[in-house]
Image 1 (cartoon, rainbow, N blue to C red):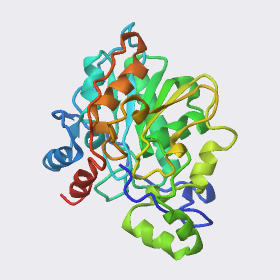
Image 2 (cartoon, rainbow, N blue to C red):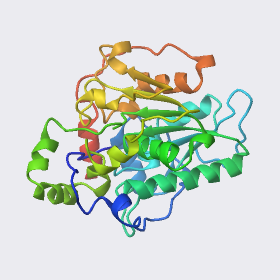
Image 3 (cartoon, one colour):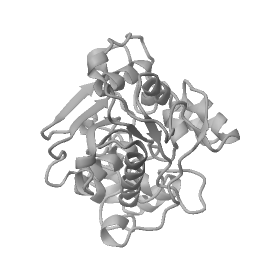
Image 4 (tube, rainbow, N blue to C red):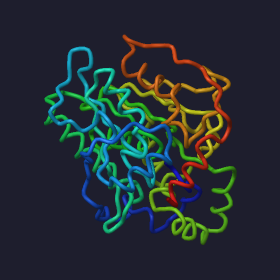
Length: 319
């Protein structure tokens, strides 16, 4: 989830990964208690509160060996101020049932904190790389495929493009990817003119949230020299009504090897935006079709109301 990506440009303390040594993060956590599938963030958050080691169903079996039809394990990376179970409790079992080995970590946590994906995104990108190495070593695979939601799309792509991860990755899928950041209905330009708002926003959200705004040092670094690198297939899956990434065209990548899919171009009545993306059945099938095109199935187009999932995310944050 990306609650509060509304500021973050200029020379500021949150330029951690560029201006100074990366800060200490909580070590990667790999949840191991299989939790039930969920249909929305709120139910996942409530279950997670009672089962803090909950893992998405079908994930984190380090004895899983890829097969000939699905030779690359899937690594799932959650969004800002979220967790593996909160964001992947629906998609992970879909991928596992299709025959993939699936792995989902909790990354980017503050030391002493109780959530993940809140800290320096450069440091989080390095944690992603460490986890990929663990997955490759356990499964014996030569490469993984990566699926990132929101911030998860940014840190996985940074690992691929900037930290030498490309040879270890076959496909990258970014769901609601803040590829070029967002201006949040014009709030970022306002914050540019009133820099004190950066500190206010950081206190209200997180360091990671503001590091991903349009024009931020991290977003500029991520896309410098081109937004893709050779050898990896990139796919973005976005929504025209994304609540956090405005304009929605900032989701798309432009480099070689990039395909950009827009939900409403395929199902015009599905008005899923940012927050519901990982729980939308149509989008889940889109992801599976990208990862397993030989067994692609046309998703069922069902109407989804504008704003679906927003209240669930807000309530989940305060549950």
